[in-house]
Length: 344
Image 1 (cartoon, rainbow, N blue to C red):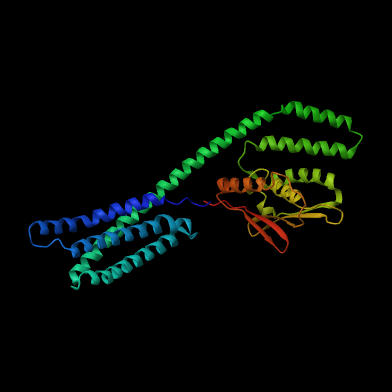
Image 2 (cartoon, rainbow, N blue to C red; image 1 turned 120 degrees about the vertical axis):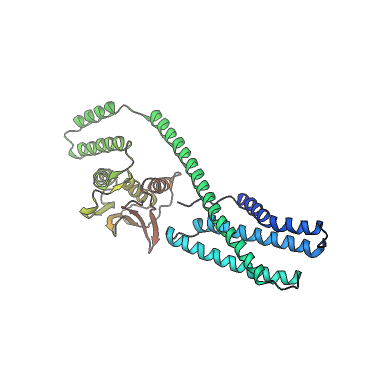
């Protein structure tokens, strides 16, 4: 999941405030010297004031942007490596700013900076760097917390909408199952019709039961998929094939309910299925991931809601498994990989 950046306006305000606060002691000292008549209020003093303020502002802004934003929104490294890289780059910025300051200062004041001046400047910028590091971490934490609150509220709203939708479309399960049983008695002499109704009944029961679960075992999903693909094969006959090869060691791994049904349905919905172009879907495990793939043979017309099922699965996988699904289109093959292990 992409992390939201810290607002630029907040970084700009904090950078300006820090630049003013850090430069304040020197400016008070210079003001006192001017007031005591020991120093003239000249253009050099004004230029020096704005130069120092500008460099402190630039230094603060660069470090906050790097530590609070760039390191989290642009770089997908491990936390430890990201932290070390951020520290090294920040130290590099520190030395770069100091050298740039010496260069510009020579145009304002021809007097060479003493070792004491340089030591004080390094000390001041190093303390500022340390303060900026902690401020950046606080800004990052606040932004992540706010984003989490917004996401939780969005999920609550979505759950309420789902519950409302379920209430609107609710059919008494007992009535439906009794109706299906009655239908089975009517078509008892037709073996294929009887099996079809039994598969449909199992599918509906599974959907009802899994609606209360965030994750189900791969073994349960495969059993449901068998019923679902039976209904598809009843419609398309030998124009649709599915090959399933799952290693036993992965059968107890958890995935979001109806994940396989969504992927197979996606293949059926987006690809031509005909006598000349039969569709074959492959489901197998590879390197700790569940893979569903099919040859790309696009339909000439697609339904209006095309793509929503896959987007929904991506969001559910990110929230429930803390992981990302991989979608590939290569060599005329459409492939979706679901990591079976959950990120911590």
